[in-house]
Image 1 (cartoon, helix red, strand yellow):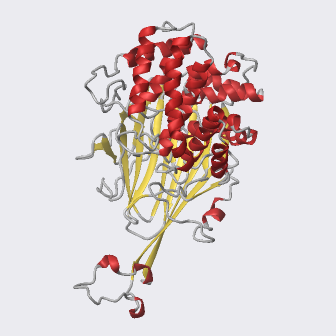
Image 2 (cartoon, helix red, strand yellow; image 1 turned 135 degrees about the horizontal axis):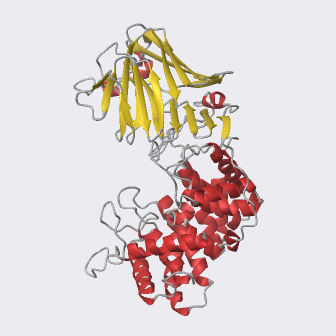
Image 3 (cartoon, helix red, strand yellow; image 1 turned 135 degrees about the vertical axis):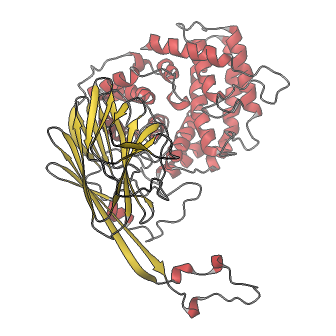
Amino acid sequence: MFKKVTAINDKWTQESMEQQIGDRESRYFGGVRDPLSGVAWPNHTGTAQYLAAWAAALVNPLSRYYRDLVLLEQLHVAMDFMLRFQHDDGTISPGWTNYHSPPDTAFVVVGLTNILTLLERQTWQPLMPVAGQIRTFLERTIPAMLSGGVHTPNHRWVLTAALGSLYRIFALESLQSRAGEWLQEGMDITPDGEWTERSNGIYNTVSDIMLYYAAQDLSRPELLEPVRQNLGMMKYLVHPDGEVVTDYSGRQDFGSVYSLADYYLCYKLMAEHDGDPEFAALADLAGGSITHPGSLPNQIMLGFLLYPQMQASSVQPGQLPERYRKVINGMWGRQELLGRIGQDGYGGPVRHSKQHTEFGAQVVRVRSGATSVSVMTEASSLFSLRHGRAKLLGVQLASSFEPGLITMDSLAEMETGFRLESVAEKGYYGTIPADKLPSRSGFPCSPWYLLPHGERALTHSQVSGVSVQVSENDAGWDLHFIAPSPVDVLTQIVLLFGSEGRLEGSALTPVPGMNGAAFWTNGTLRYSSGEDWMELDQGCHEHHLADIRGMSYPDGCQKVIVTLITPLDYTLRIRLS
């Protein structure tokens, strides 16, 4: 694996060296162009991540850039860029968001402290000026790391890791103390190992590796326990082809394709630390999908060079499960915790982020060889199925009641499958009592936005309940949808199929104005990819409304729409090859 990662890091080094801005008249001289914007940024997905690849190549004896003076000069110039783009308060700005950002600076701090540690272990003196530049950058960040705040839940652990990394370098007790202030908030992880943001593609790997570093640098071994929990959970959240389940993510990896590659460093380190055969097997699985040196905190080449145990392979990989039925967060008391919102000071505003009330929602994973199924609550899709290369990426439910997307509130396990339920209430709001009306003296009118709308009494309330029974059988899966009232609610089921496969059915009618979408009016539908296929019964077309207000229809897939009107009692049957 060391040779494979060396080759990948060298390739990436060569390509990124060519993207460094060499125009000395440019404000961005020395930075590496971002492939999307064409502008160089100093953040951890910008120039800073290339610093890690270049530094690792320079000190790796197997690299073709080992002690390469041209690359060394480019590294030196890139650090000049980093220092110029560091604000007077010690922070950096990614350029498209989060200006003067402590958390984005913290990402860079964690990466640069690792680079500094690596460079200072070397005996090659030409590296020392660059090490000096890095030390200067890091020292400037200390005030921001001691005082700075966050936006998202994982940012807390990024700042904690940055404070620990700086403590390792500068040994200031204030850094350790500030890290303790973040840690006293407690870990936002369920017993089954799910972090707040439910981000299997991106932010799990951030929280995991950051807490690994924090445990090491702050001498807090208890911080490895949530890392173990999440890494253990992930064995149930990988499809047979190695793709990570992102169907219900609360962040930008939702519905996108990710592998376990960014988990590799943490799995390998924890496998050696714990002597865990399962983690070793997952590290092997992650290693097979590596095509990139890794994001800055998870930079794999740096990991190999900093941690000798990465090459030890002292733990024999175990066998990963290929057949299971796992309810994640099945025993978690989520409703009790949600009931506390508004009590004892809980539930205040979360500015520039959100409360993430979907934290701890139940997810079911069923695996049987090459067939992989997800059943989800609090997600835009309630069901997804992979059968070999044939992919039903999602099943969405929408109606004109709320209006828009219906997400499932609860899940109950049954002998043959699972029962999902969703309840929504919608009514109207009466007059404001006279003694609650604000004074209008001095105002030429009565603006709507100055009225105390919370004082209006609810009238004519209506409740809409929907249940979906998801059942497995010998042939495949059944989804039974029931919605008894209110009557005459326009409803639709949206089936999302992979764009790479072929849809066949005599009753498919293209939807005008909606790209890649078709009504399925009756009969059987067949979707195939390669030799794998699934057949679905029974199409239905009770109304012609394709675009329900409040519903988002994803691009990059084939959309099949079943239209229904309440009261509904409809079964979708899926047979598998």
